[in-house]
Image 1 (spheres, rainbow, N blue to C red):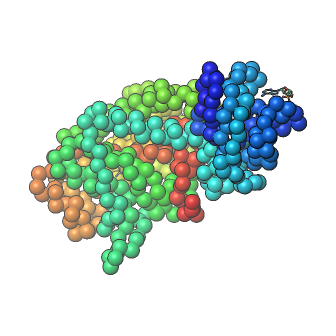
Image 2 (cartoon, helix red, strand yellow):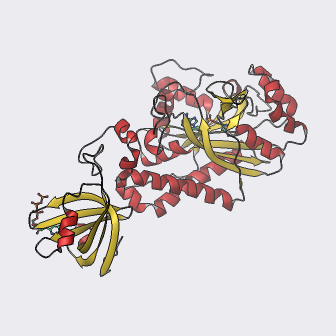
Image 3 (cartoon, protein in one colour):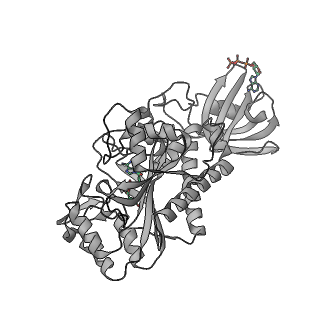
Length: 424
Ligand code: ATP
Ligand code: AMO
């Protein structure tokens, strides 16, 4: 894209809008940096230019060269008077989606033609911010000497308890798409890596179609040795705040495109609310019955979130509703060293100090009705010097969705996978 003081310029972009006023034609040309007006006074224009602009459809890709002049009425205060105008790629019309957003479209239509939808500056802004979020997270973790790992997505068994798995055919064996890198990041603690993270896909065969669940999501997984759940809550809180700060400092244009005028960076320390108190708050505020030992459903999450009004942790969960790998408190094993990080709208992350003692882990696996045999590859490292460790997993889409106030998690994924959507 040109700068206002460039005299001669070449631009290549999409035809955003065409206005033909008879003696004067205006083309708004758009690329990822913005929009510039090309003005063609027909009496003065060359025959080649006049021939080239005839019938150019919106969203065609064009290359224009010419003189840039200041023009108060034009977007950005300048216009390009072309000496050449070439159509590089003609767009069919009508368009399946109106890129200039004069005609509103529902999310399904938008997702069907994501390549057109993402030409809208407001949509592109979401994905530029998503990229900046992942960059900020990585920068934060690398500064703290974390090692980035990548672990298999094709696995032989469940991680989180045996449900919600997608089976796949793997030669003569049955295999699954991994639900979480949980077991692998823990094994890397046995390998002595001390601080690892992975940003990668997780697959969950969630039957229900909601605005906050995907069947393929992106998880930011972190695991640290010689750390407990308190250390992890502190680390996670710092990571969230630092990420918001990074967006606030580097994504002003994108936030403006999203019409977010006041981008609030959350303030620490986040309240640490024991599960028992969260249940009490929920019980008072929602109609459905809820008691100690129940998981927090969406209505309960929202009710407690409303009361808290900012990011907060729910701590000290009943061991009965957390996975086998969560460490029970020594003085009261009915509760465990697990936590959830909550945004007022929904859960953002789960984490815990893990069980690192082989015998305790085996007994917890059995107590959950699972078979230690199917966890053999995972259990083995616990017999050869497993350090105490803790970690968490954050859903990247939920982080972006809550940060930008998006209504549907699908808006935070380029090509979402849900119950009904397998293409594009
Ligand atoms: P509208 O899209 O609101 O119907 P219009 O087609 O009626 O607009 P005006 O915006 O009223 O046109 O503009 C009148 C004249 O002002 C145009 O003929 C043109 O000479 C000039 N003009 C308008 N907009 C621009 C612009 N963005 N850049 C340069 N000149 C412009
Ligand atoms: P959990 O199952 O709570 O924990 O997942 C962690 C976070 O991942 C996100 N998430 C999802 N996002 C969109 N669609 C889904 N279907 C979906 N499922 C999960 C959420 C959630 O908080 N192994 C543990 C983490 C750990 O203890 O380190 C785990 O997977 O934001």
